[in-house]
Length: 169
Ligand SMILES: CC(C)(COP(=O)(O)OP(=O)(O)OC[C@H]1O[C@@H](n2cnc3c(N)ncnc32)[C@H](O)[C@@H]1OP(=O)(O)O)[C@@H](O)C(=O)NCCC(=O)NCCS
Figure 1 (spheres, rainbow, N blue to C red):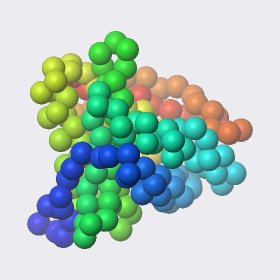
Figure 2 (cartoon, protein in one colour):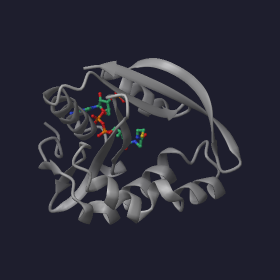
Figure 3 (cartoon, rainbow, N blue to C red):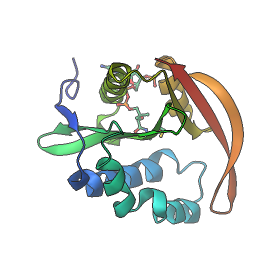
């Protein structure tokens, strides 16, 4: 097993918000830099979805399933989910430090979320990803998600392809 495959995984807490934000910023600045313009990346990262207050609220929400993976006491990846009104869950953020990607950390977090959602009797989970995020799409498809919709979204002044996936648990 490559280093990183068995790092401790735990439930995320509000105190993880700052580091989760950092990982989100790194993810946007690396993975999305090819198709989201810099001023739009900056605007989105400064918006409500990535605000520390919003992250703290999400990480404090017991109805959600939020996990982090640590290495040497430092968070190197995290996943957040949010319960939808119709009983489904949405994976809303999933980021792994670029330095430790492709070691199965994302897969462990996603599978742990699936296990917990199944335990809670949740029937379906959804996720959306930029259409140009080929690595992200391949990752979700590899984990059984099926394309359910292909729409447009606005990020700042840019119109971008936004694909939705769903999976029955
Ligand atoms: C998508 C993301 C979370 C995946 O995290 P990860 O830890 O790299 O995921 P994994 O290691 O489980 O899988 C990634 C790839 O590594 C490969 N891999 C997994 N374990 C491996 C191992 N032990 N040895 C070699 N390769 C491995 C997988 O086969 C997978 O290949 P794939 O891309 O063809 O599916 C990560 O790339 C990321 O943070 N991306 C930026 C943000 C993003 O796009 N998030 C998703 C949309 S919100």
